[in-house]
Image (cartoon, rainbow, N blue to C red; front, side, top):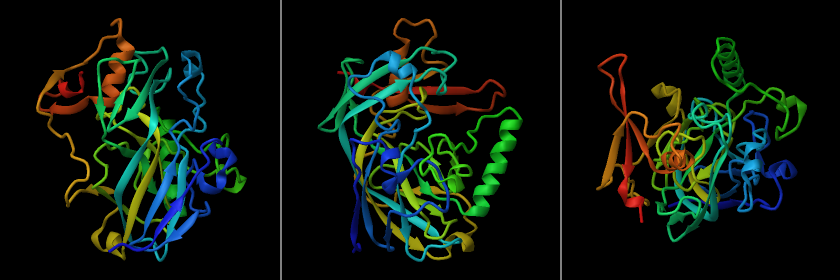
Length: 346
């Protein structure tokens, strides 16, 4: 038996920066909650696409090359869970994800795992209907529904946020990649928050940009509470994604997603849980294609830099191909295998 069902609606005609009362694009413990809910309640949340409306059916490659990454990951929320405090464990059940009718996959120059191999912009516009995504930009394939939130998580408490910021600054200083706090384009724009809030790009202990495609309806994510109320937010919902999201985007879309919250008092502290985890223990609402009946497994690099259709190949990898670490024993000659399900071809 569930509790009350709440809603958070957005105005899709306006970007997040014009509607900060229903969302944010940074993580900070002082961002005011949109609503309060109790353990056992459900919340239906409308979500924006990852680039906050910058990509449309009419977008051109020149526009893709100039995409502003500042507004990336507009999130809906936060939802404060009554009574949630540090040491608790919040269970978030993905109840339903209703996709929009339009989705897209883009290769933005300089962004994504394959940025060095594919420096040019690429765009695939998807039509979503009847449980599949199809595109005239990538003809001959139908990608099945496997919707999941790319970004989902709780706000870090102050101590955790400061620890993360210090950790990521050290990483950058040593030549690694992280996006430090930056007030430019931040929502909310309050200078007391924007200059210190964490960016959404990396995943952290309280989840965030995890891009785990198995987090579809029927699955729960368990997140240790760090800030008072937990402060749950979600966005960057994908219609489908291949393991690793190799070109930097999946099938990005808007959505109407429903979540159910269950607060486990003191469970994180008593069990020593310091980071999030996923579990699926009941009947799946969405069958997971963990091992397709017909597939091609390709060890090594599945595409080459001089291929005539390399942009399409990279897109196909990003939305449907699963990368598996097949063997690590022959150090340093590891094998990563790309599994291409043949069911997508029509």
